[in-house]
Amino acid sequence: MTVQSAVWRDQLTPEERVFLGRGDGQLTITAPDILVVGGGIMGVATAAACNDIGLGSVLLIDTGRLGSGATGGATGLLIPEPHVWSDAEPFVDLERASLERWRELEKAVPDGVGLTEVDWLGLAPHDSGFAAHQPRAVEWLNPGQVGDLIPGLARPMEGALIHRQARVNPLRAVVRMAAGLRFVATGVAATGVTIRGDQIVSVNTSEGVVTPGAVVFATGQPPVLDGLPLDIPADRVKGHLLVTEPTTLRLPGIVAPVATQIEDGRLLAGGTFDVGDETPAVRQDVIDGIMAGLTAVLPELRGLGVAYQWCCFRPRHPDRRPVIDRVPGLANAWLTSGHFRTGILNAPATASVLARWIASGEQPAERGTWSASRFARRAS
Image: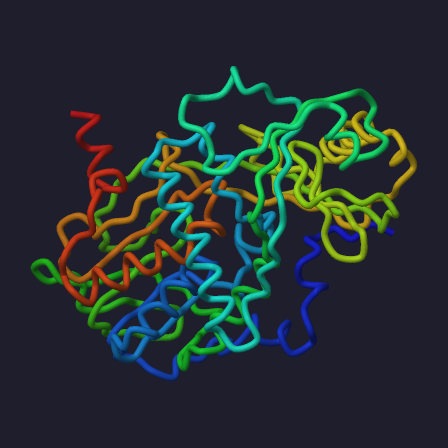
């Protein structure tokens, strides 16, 4: 029987699953120094970063459970180096810094964040076809070398091997980081704000009014709240993923664009871009297409069953770069949104940037790259 949800929750302990609903409908503090709106990986990482550097009391709220949005449906892959071939240099720098921050968190957080170091192998590339700036440590493999790593390929392929990338169970990472927070309220929706001058003085929620010193919105897409004049273009893209039944086939970590080996010999595959599909249901034709692509490359997987299948919606801005900025016109409110395919990867670095910005009042270097106002300038 195929489970119609992501694999990640079933990998948690019973205690961790309960923790995802921590503080359900309960505001135990109404005047925090920092209010973080959004309980996905970005919001939890930001709340944890603010807490770690001593910014006072931190309250994290989310409409649903922790990790219930795009976070819970993500692949959990932390692979900055392959993005050299697709992303602008400042974005790759952020991704590299964030992977290092993930490694620091694995050591600093009690019991770690569940980081698993893996290699990344991209099939069928050719060095003359990539951008001039190459990953720091890429090893080009001939078809024989690739075949030694992945026996049973349908046809010979070249490859690019990159060591020391990583992955996490995104829900486990959320639970482990949130464990250090004193004030968490799931099942609490932010509905509106009151602004005086350049300050948010209160935030209306489904459970009462909160009067924070500073606010961070980490809601995936830009927040739409009564009283908050925010106009940042964004949409979302649906993607399908699946996890197979266990197989004796062993992959050398992440094999792009085929699959990633996870626990118990299962394979994680997919990450489609179903543009224009706003339905929340899993489409069987897309799942069948993912499996067909998998078996076309690895014929011995024919007949392998699908254990989990799911879809999620990834938020993005028109230029495919996130916003990491103050809310325009406000001195005590910040925003991060539109991380699209790299929200899990970039969460720790983004959180550190925001926490330091709140603490010092000094905007970070390269702020313009992530500025909310870049869209207004483009429209003018």
